[in-house]
Image (cartoon, rainbow, N blue to C red; front, side, top):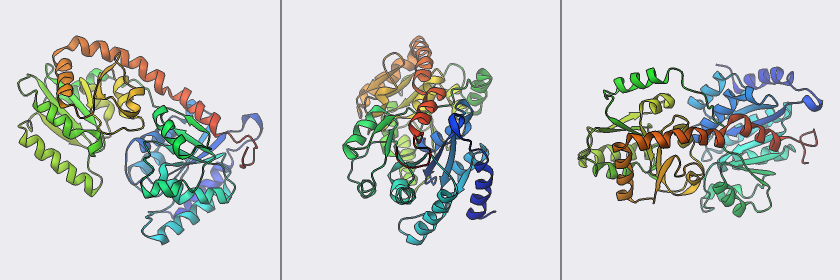
Length: 401
């Protein structure tokens, strides 16, 4: 395997040739992210890489610290990826090394904007970019309480631009960076119809041993309490007498805390007597196929999240959505395409699930409306053009406009 320096130098030679001047000059953006876990941020970055053809004026580059699923998907998409090496704040020498490698990249390459995804990236790398007179942005993907030590340190580096994944996140950002211009960009998504959807539906249901008459409830998310899996299980336990339903929970543990939570979920399903109707699928990279095989998407969040890409994926697949009426979900799901309940209201959640399990007609009506809403929210051409516009360096030399 080539060293990070070798990769950086080779990429420099290739990408420098792509830069042109004048009106046709591409806007070049460097996205900086940890990459040690896989979630909504990593899904966004992969989409920006894979769908770059829909916005030819935007040229995305990526700097990431950890090798894993995220870096593999970015490299497979054929975009420039700069590996900075595993980085832990508790090990200062790894931070110094990663900063040195990023500095080398920024000294060799011209970028109109360096986007730090989440507070961690801004803390570690925002100062490096600022020191080289690069325009710096923070792309926030969720609610910031301001109490976490990383968030407090991140406020010492005021970005030139803040990007929020929803109006909910933007309102929160303005509390912490009141002098920073804030732009809302809904996450662009690859809104591509699943080829042979009917065949995929039949295949995944056959794989899971589910017949055509059984209503499949799906949840795809990180295994963490705010995603509401425990509440989901308790609501499902109220539907034991309801015939013909199963629940698929997709998502694999990625940390020790998630391992512990996963064991708690398994034990809870057993204690509630629904273990035979709840199937833990582990980490899956075929979410569109799972959605094709499902009938209902349900994720009763217990804390607000900034947006929720999987809700848009479910709407695009024509599946009605059940969630909690908090956070960015309120900008995605309305009564035309889903059902919202109060967070933690197990009875209301059970009632919504029962309604959709027993009413195929309601499922169809809500699902059909969801397709248009998904396109309105996350059309990749629209959202990536917004990103190009806010990323453009008006001075033409990487400084502040």
